[in-house]
Length: 253
Image (cartoon, rainbow, N blue to C red; front, side, top):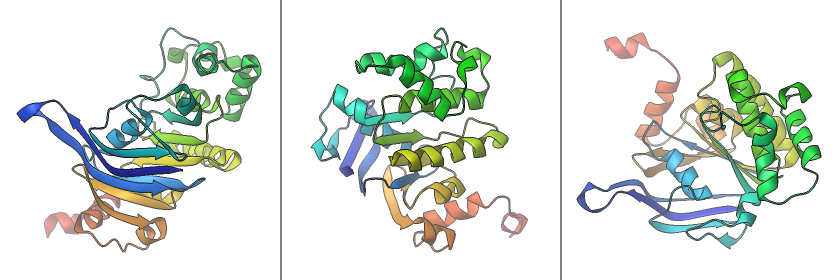
C-alpha cells in the first residue's frame, strides 16, 4: 500500500540548511500497522508529513496504492489517506463546532449524505449527538482527539497516519484512545502508520517498526523482536532501556 524509497527532506537553503530526513526507505502492506520510532528530533513526524504532502520531499520517491506521489497531493489522495495529529486542540479550529469540523472533509470531497456521515463518524468514536454542536474549548483532551479521529474517518479512507496520537493526553485517557484506534483499524481494515517515541505503544499496536535516529533509519524489526528485548543496534538497545523507566543501578554505576 505504501512504498517509501530513499526519502530525503531538507529545510532551509545553502549552509544554513538542515537535512531532517536522510535516505529513509520502508514499505507497508495493505491492512498492516507499521511503526516509526525514535526520540524527539529523529525525523519520524517529518516522514509522516512528507507522506501526506504537508512537507515537500527534497529527494526520493513515495508511492501510495501503486501511484507515484508528486509535489502536490490530489483530492483523490486525501480521500485515500487521512492523518491524526499530535495536538488535538491545535488541529481543531477554535471557532468551529464539532459538526463543522467533522463535516468539512465531506464538503471538500463533495460527498453526499453529510448529515449521516457526520453522525456515524461521531458515534464510531464514542461521541453522541450532544457533542455535535459543541466547540473545542468545551471538550476534554480525549474528546478533542476523538473529534480529530472522527474527522479523519468521515471520508472513509484506506490509510490512517497517526502522529503521536496519545502523547498530549493524560495517562488515564491514553489507553481509551489506543483501544479506539485498534478497534477502528480492525473494523475498517485500515493500513496504518503510527509515529511514537513510546516503544510500549508501538509494540502493542504494530506488527513491524522502523527505528530512526538523527534522520536516518537505524533498524527495522518486528514487534516480537522488540518485546523479546533482542534489538541488534546499540541505539535501539538504549532506546529500549530508556523506555523501561528509571534504573538506579544505571545511574550509580
